[in-house]
Amino acid sequence: MSLLTVAQALGSDPGGSVEVQGWVRTRRDSKAGLSFIAINDGSCFDNLQLVAPSDLENYASEVQHLTTGCSIRASGELVESKGKGQSVEVQVKSIEVIGLVEDPDTYPVAAKRHTFEYLRDVAHLRVRTNTFGAVARVRNCLAQAIHRYMHQNGFYWVHTPIITASDCEGAGEMFRVSTLDLANLPQNDEGQVDFGEDFFGRDAYLTVSGQINVETYCCALSKVYTFGPTFRAENSNTSRHLAEFWMIEPEIAFADLGDAITLSEDMLKYCLDAVLTERADDMGFFDLRIDKGIIDRLRHVVESDFRVLPYTEAVDLLQKSSQKFEFPVEWGLDLQSEHERYLTEEHFKQPVVLVDYPRDIKAFYMRCNDDGKTVAAMDVLVPRIGEIVGGSQREERLDKLDERLDEMGLNKDDYWWYRDLRRYGTVPHAGFGLGFERLVQFCTGMSNIRDVIPFPRTPRSAAF
RNA sequence: UCCCCGAUAGCUCAAUGGUAGAGCGAGCGGCUGUUAACCGCUAGGUUCUAGGUUCGAGUCCUAGUCGGGGAGCCA
Image (cartoon, rainbow, N blue to C red; front, side, top):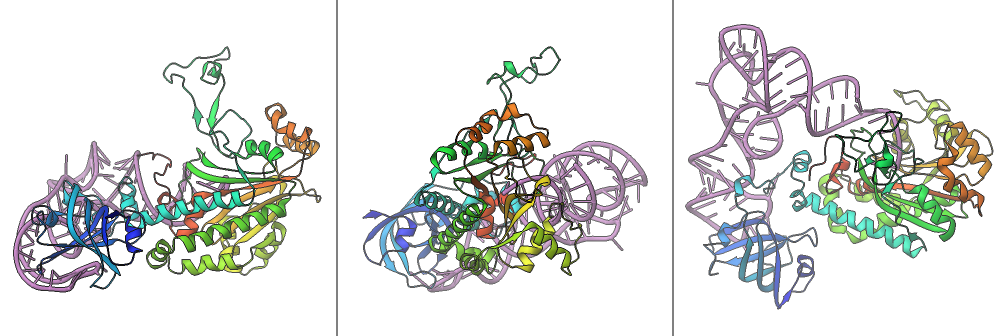
């Protein structure tokens, strides 16, 4: 007798004794003297059907009282199924009840349709549903695929800090990290809070990006990436933003913007292909129940080239299009969501890489192009999600970097170690940030980002 | 943060300012190698919170909380 996962049992040929365990999804009784019990253990999308005969010694006392959510262990023969819907099933010899559901009437995830909004309120149990189990497996598949891709291509995974004292991140509002007593804050001579008394002897925050840190490792190890949580204290209330999300940030030395674009395209395609082949069961579900046609759309992305388009040409294209937009399109203004969506969803119908944005609307570290007006920045736009990747070639020339810091009114001293990289063996380098949850959204068709992370953190919401 | 919409049974939703309803789920029974099972019966309610208008409020008004769609910020 061997203990098998549901995935292993479903993949086995009939014959032989097996032991399986899992949570009951449904129970159907037959007065012919049988109960059909579908169990799931998370090892795959499908359930395993147990056929429990009425002559089991605990049939009336326990088996007939099994409800959705109960945990059980069963042993019996793996046999060819006499019914439709599954190839094999377990002809049960014994069932052991591990944990009952104490009140089936109020069990939060009963075997019926639930809205995702409701399930967010029972996030500790929602992963027992088809949808959230599938999301969890696809999410894992994507994370593994990213690490595998990076490893196979000679990238080192760098663990950049989560707590940062850098003032130079600037990618968004930051969460403060402090051990000071909020009810009794130390003050300095100017009457301001004295963070010299705080844990780190200064003010500190949760990171909004590992980029600045990972650039240092890039300028020694050549090909590196971060993959970890990041935090933004923006009051964003949308289906595409989280206060705590995961980001992949590759950084490559001796590289330009084109190298970063190539990498982002190659990596995204690798990830989509991994999901399509390794999680065909879950993707079949998303295609059928969540977002019809998503499998074909992902295949199309894998098979087609990303369309690279300079910002200036995009503005031209949008201005000449017959499409009516709510917001103006004008060189020098950032593109709005509606513009990005038009480009990727309607005009090109494929991922679009916008490059060479006006320097005035982009960050200080992006490399100035020779035209003096634009920087070597890139955004990868995909249908439905919008911006999934944002990146750039970094300014490796110290004089140009200083010029930009001055322009933006930033203090050079705060960037002393970042500037050192340009003083000691500087090198052209480029990188980007890939929003992991947006990638999961893109692959699953889940419309709200709160449903592709186990325990979402958003403004006014940090339950669980 | 801004605009719009919503909150009623465990869940999804009905209910002219006048007795609180259905489907699903749950419990019990029937039927059936069942699989979105099917049929019958039963139980299940502080109508989001706090004020207000009214003889009377689930329904109208004000504020708040939470959720959804869109926008901004971005990944």
